[in-house]
Image 1 (cartoon, rainbow, N blue to C red):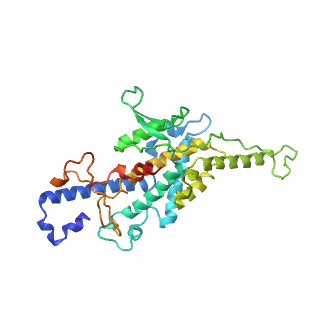
Image 2 (cartoon, helix red, strand yellow):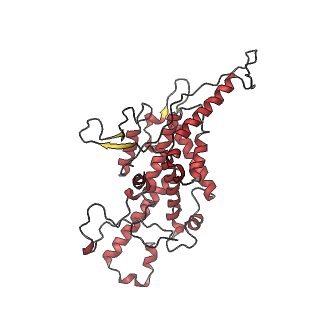
Image 3 (cartoon, rainbow, N blue to C red):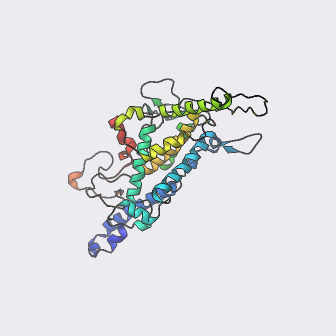
Length: 350
């Protein structure tokens, strides 16, 4: 957008300082978009996982991904497949991004980036619905400088002393805190998912070579009958570990949530503990939500948004606020911030 301003006839009358501020805001916005594109192109968040947590060493075979990390990897592939179906390709072609942004594109250079404003907001809408579907509303951050072990901990707001965010195989607190600190993100206020009951994986019972029939009255066999019951139990656990009953009719329909629900209930059922799998998937969802918060929020006082393909979230560092606007405490009220994203604003409606 800034390059188009330079071609305007009146641009020569803009002061050098204002030009510098415009250029800096434009470059900073482009850098944010590029960083988000690099993440979202393949939903790549493997760096959130310490090596010791991401892999499982086996004495009798090769090193493989730990169950939680493997669950995240499969979800990553699911997201790529889902958005490939939605857009025709993923990342979408620049022309597709421009068309998806609006029937009439107002300014901007949509061909320079695939992550247009409207594509970002489409993703934000999808993942906001997924967040609403999965988030544990009772879990919040507790900050204490006096705590010797760690500054940040997840606690139950209702006082559930049985809650523990971390397990030996998945230290989620440290993983999320380190990711946020690395990128200077504020922590999502409610950072933990609803978790299904722990159901250890069950070995498939084989009756081959036994010389006798073990079929039950329905002809399914004892082993197959138990596997079928286990699958249904796991699927029920996944359904109950959502906010669908809490949200009721207020929950907006989302094709991503529908597809995710079907994916989750079919993903390695019986091979991995659903509690472990859900928490592993949540790490990816948390990372995506934090990335989207950097590009999906418009500046609060923008009046004309319809049909705008370019992003409306410039940083205003160095800009002088008019004298009649001074005195405001905290962040600039005219600037888009992380805290204006869905995960920060939706708790007010709970």
